[in-house]
Amino acid sequence: MKFYPINLNLKEKNVLIVGAGKVALRKFKRLLQTGAQIKIIAPEFNQEFLPYLNQESEKYIFLKRKFKDKDLVGQFLVFAATDNSELNQRIALLARGKNILVNIIDSAELSDFTVPAVVKRGELLLTAASGSNLPALSKNIRKKLESDFGMEYRLLLDIMSEKRQAIIENIDNSELRKLIFREIASADFLAKIRKIIVNYNPQILANSDYQSKNSEYQLVKKEIEKAITQLIERKKSHNEEL
Image 1 (spheres, rainbow, N blue to C red):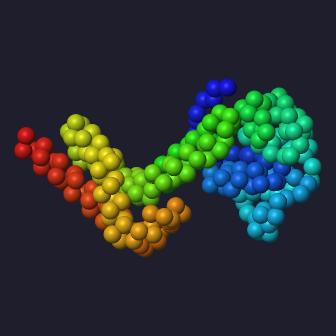
Image 2 (tube, rainbow, N blue to C red; image 1 turned 90 degrees about the horizontal axis):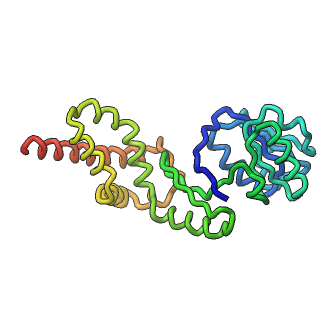
Image 3 (cartoon, helix red, strand yellow; image 1 turned 180 degrees about the horizontal axis):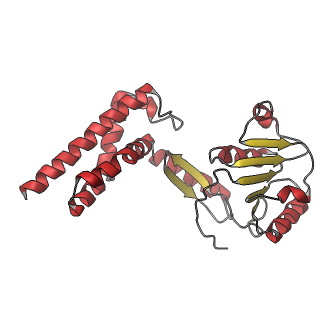
């Protein structure tokens, strides 16, 4: 089966998860990062849901009961994540009849989409999928991606989200701009960023959940911004000499 890769904006979209086992928990945790409005329905919940069950949130709602056909009304995405294959298949048919995208955890053939293994570094999103033929392979690839793509990528993209437009506005020469952007994105410059981080605090590289509001993060960010400014000035100076 050939899937079309796509990144969905789920902010404020209604997403239904039927089932509350370990797989459903993984889906739920990832969906929490998207800003979706999540509804989870199941007669019983995995104990790891308890921290969420015991607190109110505008992001999600839990219904401790069996699935009803009317639960599909108004949903944008549906995850059928129960341990009952017949129920999952029934949900798939009902959802498809209402033109709702559905993922069946135990059947890629019945699913409208699958969810790949993911590595996220700020705005950088890396995924790996094995067509549901060997999920363990996707998991191993994800681990390699986590090792190969560290916090330097997140820091660089955080900074460029602020600086890119200014660079475009301040450098009229389009070829020079392209050269600067290529240099900033190069392996050599990323290695330089990594060195800056290591010299400041190697622990930053190992913390994928590092908070951008952290004062230490901001200090490292300033050092990287300085390196970018120096790179730009060097390229501009070289271009003027030609």
